[in-house]
Image 1: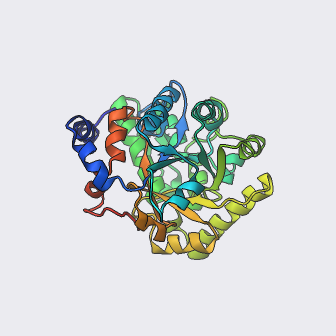
Image 2 (image 1 turned 120 degrees about the vertical axis):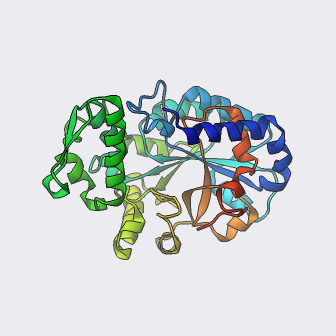
Length: 347
């Protein structure tokens, strides 16, 4: 489902490229390059209500994107190499990151990366890997899509939310996602999902995430880097400080115990402005990570060498699978437009 904001954004991104404005902006605004943010890479992705369609891209689009980046002279480098390049500048470079550790990162994305000899980093949350937590944003959408009504837990009001028709399904799903984002405590999310009946049937379509054997195999791949993504994919801003630090440190320790290598890089599970502030950045540094990436929109500049635990990324959005859109984003033209005029985006 395409809303007015999405239509407007597509118009701006397309116009930015085809008007030539993005090309003119590149020498001034594109900086050292960018970190790309992906989640799922899979053929014929399904999002029953369209609420998570932005999180999946087609392997064919990834293939065309990587070919286009190389054709336009951008270097495809590991995250380690990109960070080494930041203070010195030089040829623009792109590092590719994928959040959460989805199984399709291995089955659908890896062959594309191998074709283009493109390094990439996968940020793993051990709780998702082990099945201790489910991705609530997906299971809520799926539950509403297959239901005529959702019955809230008694502690949440106990109301029945009718969702038999398409408009109601969208409204109820959005309401539940908002509730899980802002109202239900992080540690209570799985219990909430269980009480509304979202969990028992959530694995009917098969496994979502890589298991530890697959992550161990991927960690040995010459193109792959495994990063940390907290233990339970929690919003760190909503946690007490020591709990937040534990989520970071324990995720690195858990990955090290399984793979033999301690992750150097971290991704905040919720990396937008209200979820990552000075406290979270300080905690990522205290946990010993060499870098931490947000979901804040922006290209990279030399100045980011002094803000390695608050790095912006460019989202490769499943609803915007056109090369012209990504070219505009990588030109740097949209960075100040999205960040109150700031060229170097930090917290």
